[in-house]
Image (tube, rainbow, N blue to C red; front, side, top):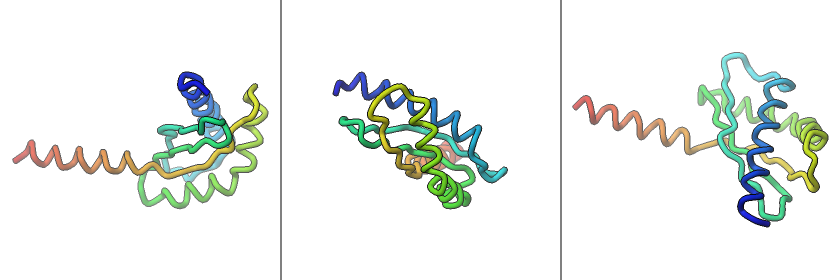
Amino acid sequence: MSQRRILQVNELIKRELGKIIFRDISLPKEALATITRINTSSNLIQAKVYISILPQEKSKEVLSILNKKIFDIQQELNSRLRMRPVPKIIFIEEKETKKAQEIEKLLEEIKKN
């Protein structure tokens, strides 16, 4: 499958999952979950959905909620997308955002000194 097609599928899944999670899933009020990126396999069998969660202490709770509701989320995604096969979604906590925050913090400290 072409790289362009995979990028289009990633963007489509990201947009639709964002709507589903925002509308249908009850997350803790103090938690903010953002879909940062999606990596769909070249055969469209699975899509790894990377989620950034703030504050960091709520990440396990939010991922637990999402994983408990994954069947319902997948069913809703299947009904919304007009493509076959619809990739199976897998939620993964985004670690890159945390690393970027740490680097920003270090850079700010260097600027001050």
